[in-house]
Amino acid sequence: MVIEMSQEFGWIAPEERDYSVAKAHDEILSFSKLFGSTAWNLSGTGEKKIVLLHEALTKLWNGTFPINTQTIGDCVSHGYAKGIEVLMAVEILLRKESEKWPGVLTATEWIYGTSRVIQGQGRLRNMDGSLGSWAQKAVKDNGTLLRKKYDKYDLTNYSGKVAKAWGFNELPYELEPTADEHPIQTTALVTSYEEARDAIANGYPVVVCSNQGFTMKRDSEGFARPQGRWAHCMLFSSVDDEYKRPGLLCINSWGENWIDGPKRHNQPEGSFWVDADAADRMLKQQDSYALSNFKGYPAQEINNNLW
Image (cartoon, rainbow, N blue to C red; front, side, top):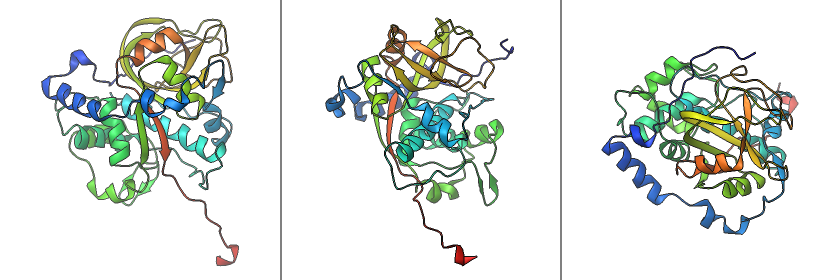
C-alpha cells in the first residue's frame, strides 16, 4: 500500500525561470560537453544490454540500496548525491580503482548550497530548488562532502533545515578546501534515451531533470506509467535494453513507500522502470548529465602495530 505523502520537487523548470535564471542556465549549457560528441566511441555500445549499476552500491551498502527521503525542494542535490554514490561504487568494484568505500553516503546539503549560492549566484532568492546545470558544475568546481561531522557541522543525518539555510546564503565556506578534494571530474549533457543507455552501459549514471510525472504504482513489469507533471530530479541508474520494453531504472528521493507494485532486477524500493520513449522525452529537456571520474578516497595499508 502506498503511503499518502506530499511530494517534494525542486527542479526549476523552464516555465519557472526568470530571465536571469534562464540566461545563467543557457550560458552553462553552451559550455557543457555533449555526451553524443564527447563519447562518440561509445555510441551503440549499450544496445541489447542489461547493466545494473545500482547493484554496485547495493553490494557496498550491506545488501540494501540506500534510499533518500527529501523534506524540502532539494531534489536536484539528492539526484546528484545518489549518482555520485553509484559512480563511486562502480569505480571501486567494477573498475578495480585503487580507492576505498568511505562507509558513509554523500551530503546533499553541500550540493544544494553550492549549486544555488555559488553556481546560481543567489538568483533563486524567493524559492527552493535548483537546476541540473548548476548542480553538475557545483560537484565539479566545488566538490563534495560525506555524511559525517566536520568540526561544528554535523552532516551525519540529512537535514532539510540545514539544506535550506545553506541554499539561502548561509553556506559554510570554510568547508570548501575539504570538499575540493573530492569532485566529479567529468560530466556530459545527455539528451536522448540512446545516449543514456550507452552511458549507463559503460558505468556512467545519468542524473535526469525534467517535468515528466508518473503514476504511483508500478505495473506487472516494474514500470510506472507517465502521468502528470513533476518539476523533479531523479537518477537513471540502470538499463535493460534487451527486454521487450527497453527502459531505464529511475531512483527517486521520496523514500521507500511512495510507490508499490512488482519489481525486476532486484530494483530498490521506491524506484521504477521508465520506458525508452518516456526517458527520451525527459532527456530532451536538456538538463540531464552523465557523471564520470569521481576523485574518491585512496585505499591505505594500515599497520596494525600502530595501535
